[in-house]
Image 1 (cartoon, rainbow, N blue to C red):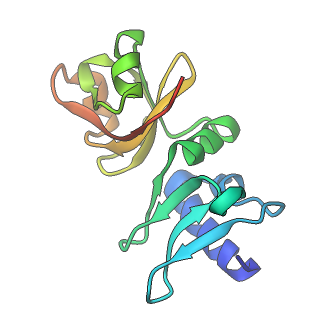
Image 2 (image 1 turned 135 degrees about the vertical axis):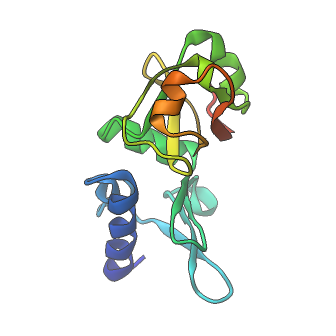
Image 3 (image 1 turned 90 degrees about the vertical axis):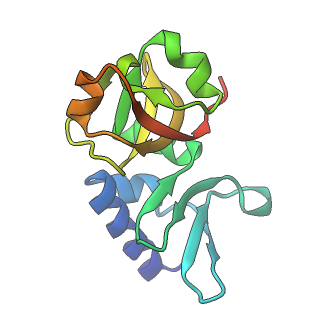
Length: 156
């Protein structure tokens, strides 16, 4: 990945996840691999490792990132966001890739909107990453419904 592309991807990450997210996901000192579509558009960014390493993010045709567990870990460790925290009763289900329901959400960042990428946590530990289905207020207030549609659960 050249410096111009890294800068463009960082701009998208900062816009989507907040200031500092771009440097957290795509640091200068890492040889990241970009997987491209047939048209040359970035599709995925992989961390260093064998065969390109683990996926950090996918870049959608809408111009937004979807997080992998590895990308979520980076954001949580450096920025502490974006988070929807659930109670321990949900932990085994969410880790297994099941959706997080509103009645079990204990805390959520106030700026989370439907469609946002979030990290589902319990006691600070990453359980999964996925897409918010409700606004932050709805996650706190509703007793029914999916709060986060989980894409990938994190191993313990």
